[in-house]
Image 1: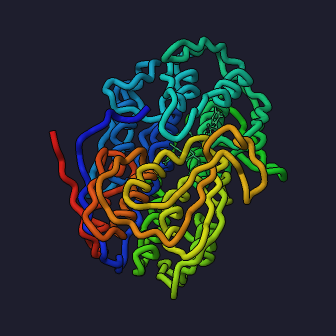
Image 2: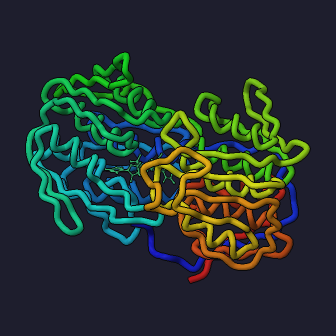
Image 3: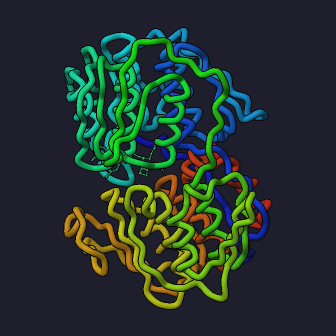
Length: 442
Ligand code: EPU
């Protein structure tokens, strides 16, 4: 479920190549997950390099409603969570602002109270996003599940088990990790997702005292514990890899260059090679990664897959980047069944993109002939601007790049999507030379 539609508008005047350095903020999908993970510890936790984004605010509201004390300093980019007041077992959003993290609280709340009520996120703009794998791990860990219309009621004592996930799910892996830490006995998570933010969650748990290790096949083995778990030192968030790739793609698409500060190379290996295949030059300075446009943008074929392959959160900005190439490019989305809603909006701005249920020119995937999940990009596109609606967070940045490329001004409605996951995007884009304004309307 997303926030309600709003009337805030991004106004962009295109034609300026982005140039300069940008500091990449802390990772959204690490920060919010470690906020939730803090609820299984026995002492306050301080997170550093916390991004100023809507999703952190929504997660704070949810945890606060459960009795967690939260102190946030935007100036110091720190967030302190004190779980001692945790008193409620119902993770229900109080306002219309919601994200998908309620269900991740299942394990922690079951540990503290022996029962939990979590809110179902419902379908969303990027696909059905069912919860079956979340319910699968909870069932395996011995929990009784009562699925209702909008909530799931859970009861029982967590018991260690072997959880053999049929598909690599980020959220289900994270939820299973938290539940397993407080389960009775050992848990083995087979076929876990491997996103960098999950590695950070594992490091967080290990630092707090959890016995956790990897098996040769990549399975994660956790020894459940009721011992006191605490972190002696603050935990620093890694850079947001999606933000980094978004600015890199914007710089190359507009014929400019960007120096990315605060991002770790190992998180974006596949995406860096994709940038090079699209004609960009990438230089590693030691402290930063410089991405600059080459002689021309080259057409390419890309497919999304779980990490360390090319991420589904990168596809939107690459679709716009590849549209600058002469020739045909393709993007095959194999993670979410409906992540091309924004294509219609790009076409309103002058794009020439065609979505299809076929997988060609790629190998067949589970969405073949069922969902529109492949986009053919007929380049070069000459965006002419106009009005379009932002459909979701990652589409927000892709549509913004289209605006930066357009000949006449662009207005994008539903601007809150951008602010949910990008830290100070207007300031950062402006510092790179973009002409962009956020017009807040009542
Ligand atoms: N899936 C199921 N059943 C489940 C769970 C997932 O079928 O119970 C399916 C999903 O429908 C999807 C696939 O498995 O087709 C992968 O979903 P996953 O669970 O990995 O995604 P998620 O945890 O819901 C997180 C990020 C997304 C990111 C994906 C994939 C957060 C809050 N969200 O979602 O980030 O795209 O992993 O990497 O961590 C974003 O930041 O804009 C964003 C959407």
